[in-house]
Length: 623
View 1 (cartoon, rainbow, N blue to C red):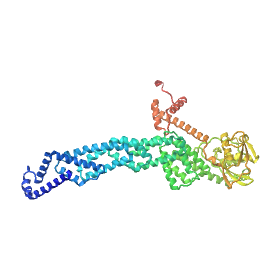
View 2: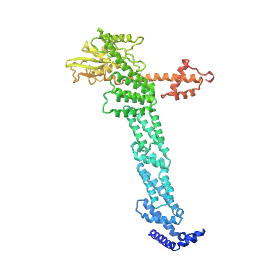
View 3: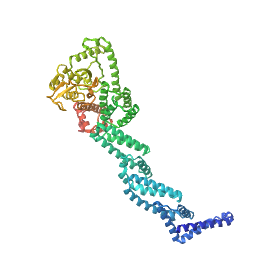
């Protein structure tokens, strides 16, 4: 009621002054304008009104207090007469005492209001809701300035909100809710946090928490050995999620992009070698024939995303070893889904690693193409009609040793007919390529064996080792484990795997006695006379595609040996250039040039080895 009367008094005063100004306007235009010491009639009227306001200070104080109370009610959600507030605020502006009379207590009251609100709401609300409330408050105060406050009040008023609702609580907001918003992929709330933190220069703190979250979450994925089978899939999903957050919530900020890359590279290399190995196996699974349900475009997009993850891995030599091993199986066993996809992946690896890796992989494809030409030439030659060849169709892949994985030597006993086939082809090949040496590798060889079962004839697609076991049953219906081992000379662990696949797998062409899941030395195996199957050609050689523990161990040992050679070469190269160097200086340079993770203790062992072999020597004056 008081404020309404005050507004009426002010309006009445303005109306009367306008009337007086019209009557004495000639004086303003002539006499007053020529005397600089005199003020206009309108200014004298404002001066008199202001003096009476000061004389009756209680009126001014009550007016200001009433205005502050109305604004506080509006902040609390009540509906107030904005036009009334506007009139009285403009009164203070016209009297030119707005800042000291109204703005100063208004700002003080605003600080107290928002300091209390910030403390209270942050403990009650979830972080997402709190940030939405802050954004709402900023909008309300901007709207308040637009409707009835002076434009000059905007900056200090918004600064109060930023200080008491944001700046003082940045750490609390991040600790309480950032990880939750990230884990739940709440992009709208994260975008709001990014915008609001930008107002108080808190992007660095936000980025630090972003890095911490990536490292913590990524490390949990990488170090969980029980979920190795899904590690790459989980990493791809995690990276896609982070990219989406960076793009939509963090406005593609370059510093956040650098933090994302650095954090990813940091956690993925905490577990040495394994991520690189699993990436190679993941690609193998996608590139095998039999993998269905995805279009070429989807495969292409997937490969691009895998390459991004691969880029962060430091153990690229581990990836090379396992990828090359799996590629060899796909090519030699005919399990590759598409040669175009294979070559596409190689081109991507070439872009990432250069020709050092891709050159060997491209060489493997060249060997396959050359082998087809060699076999066509062999089939057209007189050697293919050698009586020793019989009616067996032989297919040989001639591989360049430097391109392909190293395989463990095979000492299995081949039957005469198979060894004769090898001799015929060897004679043909060496007659065409003098000076070369052929070394037979049988671990990935496979055969089509015709089997005559009482219930019908079948064609069994089996590995060479499985073939050796099956051929023994041409002369006997039942054999014991020791007899099979002695006559095939297959390594024990491999032989047990083969017998499990033939007698305990989905397709059981042999019967085991006594029954059990494990192969023991005293077991007996018999020809399955009652075997039936709906297909004519049956695949039993899937075990060749599966990796054995021995194969994995052999591959890792090969990687370790290759790394030792690289370390030795790097040490010698550095010492030849520097002639003399301290131990710490040598370690520092080695860490800088080696492209795989290595421990100082391993480097020290290689130094000791080189000293023993007299490639380098200790400085006698410095020991």
